[in-house]
Image 1: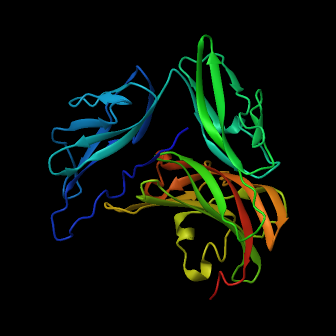
Image 2: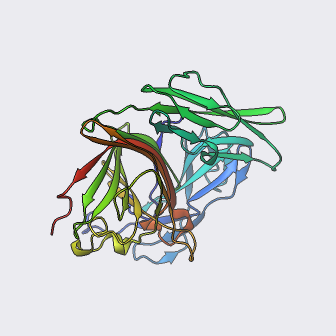
Image 3: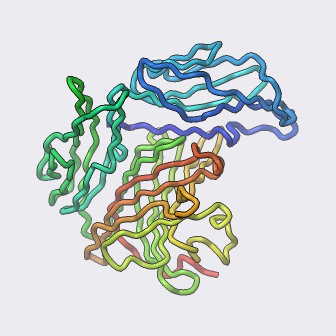
Length: 381
């Protein structure tokens, strides 16, 4: 089961500088995200060198490194990458007197299976089909067979081994699940977890788990809160807010989904696009207190130096379709002092620092179980 967090911000500054000091040169690499199969090679990243005046000039000699070198190796002079085994590696291009350039390379096996949402949080009786949350890569194409192991903890969940349909049991608990893909004599597997959470009172803590895939990568969980709140016009809207801190306490991430109306019941709710200008609007047009449409945000803060932030806003991927994803409510039931809500969300987000770059896309997927609280003082003029 994966337990890692990796963030890369190439366009944003990677360090804090004294403004009285000369501005250092900057190395920029392109593409900042690429992939290859184990055993294959990848051409060197394109280098753009900005001198201290911000002008593009011929770069000085570049020294290439990669980490971890157990995933991929790199020629220190030519920058050519060679894939070793499945994983993600960080390429660094360095030159004297310049901020280094960074890029990610993803190495896959010739037959590879990746769980796009490796841990799921469900309530008793919930079902989830794993099909949309699996990615299979096969070098050269061809047919393959996908199947799942039976549950090792049937009181926590049961598994349809052919369809990958999880059904949550009636008790709180966590148990692993295993997906396998086979092509000829080759079989590979990936392991995730099912976490069933029974909440009976709104004073209890909500929980979520999510995966974020793109130039920033996360697989983590933390606290979840859901709120019906009064907008500035006194009508009621809905907000889901998830918060997680990395295991080494260096990063804190937030995911939020805002709907223009309260949730009336079970169902699927659209997550639309929002641009940075709308998200940074003045208080009178606050996107939470006066949401222009349903929208989502993924926000990551680096808590140690060099400090940095990533803002990624829900963003449709075509000029004619602004729909970025959906929020699905699978459980809305009574509890002591209120209601418990459970479900999942999936949306495409565009990083603000890479807003015009296709590689700035982050795919945000999560599941949650949390009390649904009511607030009347969230928005005040």
